[in-house]
Image 1: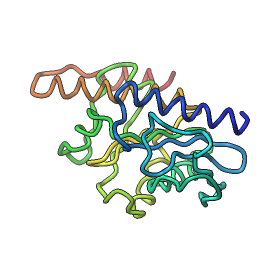
Image 2: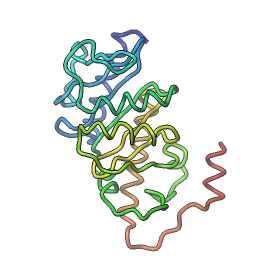
Image 3: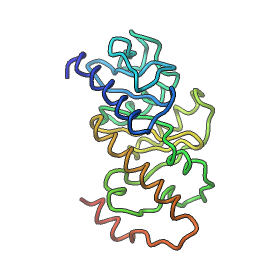
Length: 207
């Protein structure tokens, strides 16, 4: 993909996220791998109003080399790309239902979300929960890097999801499945539920 095509694709995805209500205000950020680095959305920018010419350009080590100043959370993307060589795109949002789940008290050893549907398992898999750090706190980089080694989908406590994909669409579909499953989980709270069995989950993960 050429640099200009990558810039247009990133802006289109920002608009899709904004139109679908998965981001609001200037919350959230996106990135897309390009030759010798990646493009990331600038700081304090509405994802629904991105300008291709003003996207931030980072080198392969995450150093800022051009465009507007990158999101203060660009280090999240650097951390994930460092341990997931198959990742071509990353989406981070503060989507409502996922953030709500990230604020719940999760018992040690229990899954963040129960395996309620087959598509949640196929698109999200096992969701990792990362402890809370102040937004922009670079200690979060190590925590996200450790979680991303085994998990393409990471949920930051009291903050929101960070999702890596082989392309922007794959990351989007995982985000949407996570958001809808979080919504279902909250709707079912307090009711007796019947999650997928461990055998059913294993069969789905085996492909």
